[in-house]
Amino acid sequence: MPTELEAVAAEAAGCTRCRLHQSRTQVVFGQGDPHADLMFVGEAPGFHEDRQGLPFVGPSGQLLNRLLEGIGLRRQDVYVCNVNKSRPPNNRDPLPDEIAACRPWLDAQVRLVDPKVVVTLGNFAAKTLLETTTGITRLRGRTYPFQGRVLLPTFHPAAALHAQGRRTAGPSPLEAMEDDFRVLAELLAAQAPASEASEDRPSEQLGLF
Image (cartoon, rainbow, N blue to C red; front, side, top):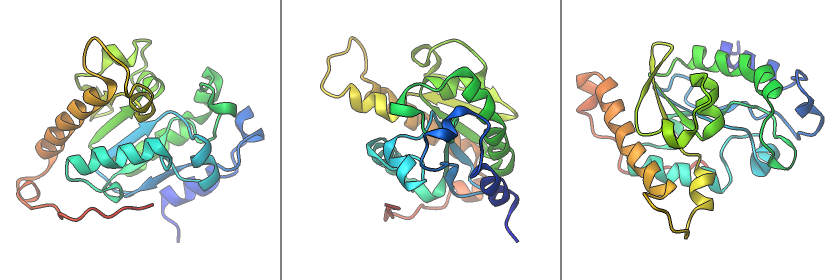
């Protein structure tokens, strides 16, 4: 018998609720530990994700993996998904009606995985879950309550990659993300029972891809 999360994923695989089904290769539902304490929510699949059917497998995913390793986590320790499950043509921004059409899938993922901490990656995920028009630059740097959980907004890895080599007045997006992941490590340590918090995590990092 499939789990409820697997059943939802199977239903989403044939979704035609918005126009994006016309141009996608396949639905990119989500990946990772179905009982993870930590969930990442990005914007929408890109080229590589659309082809492979998995979230964050391109350069952005490689950066996400490195940031996770930096705080002692492996990709398979967490659950990763996007606001939109289908790739917008030419990686354009998702439209409001597309986000609204896909929202029930995301709500189901949050309910069924039941993470303690949700990290939003980029503008669209933060604005969607926090129901705000405030941009990510102003939102990041603090935590927010979200459905009885803790939500931590940070930049999208793609923004950090695009900004590499550019001069910025303050911290670069990558430096900001590294700071946010240090906060994330503290959040997870505070959420963990004392017995778990004292356990050493495996030193070896196992790559999924």
